[in-house]
Image 1 (cartoon, rainbow, N blue to C red):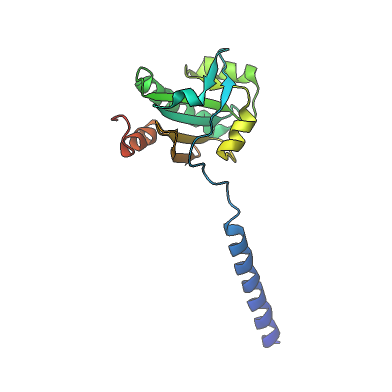
Image 2: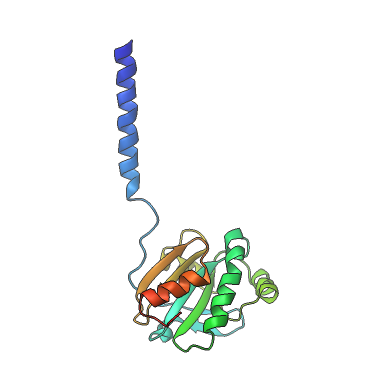
Length: 171
């Protein structure tokens, strides 16, 4: 009986190892080396074109109003924007993730934030960036390289620290 129990135990342990190793490479999609070029209509009726942003640091934030962590991080994005809105070398853009325009407009009217909010072509943009859940935020260098990814809520301090770390504007 002990031999059978021991054999079953070894078999189970072996299966756990096999499953753990096979799942290792199937996590979230890889972060793109360079930010995908995308265009889309913004909440205010304008347009945003990522290719036009070359030469600037761009913070690309994927969010939804139904996402609790997105709502919690929003004041941090407002603080970051307030600090850098007049800096020609820094841009913040939000990309809506599975949300409707009326709800987003109400959210920004109530919670603040005057940066571009892309509301069209957002599904394709999320796929191109490899977004799996919101919030996700990417820091893109002036050359278009994705230099940092934040999964979950991000703070103004974290964004500023990464800008400084990668030789961007001083915090």
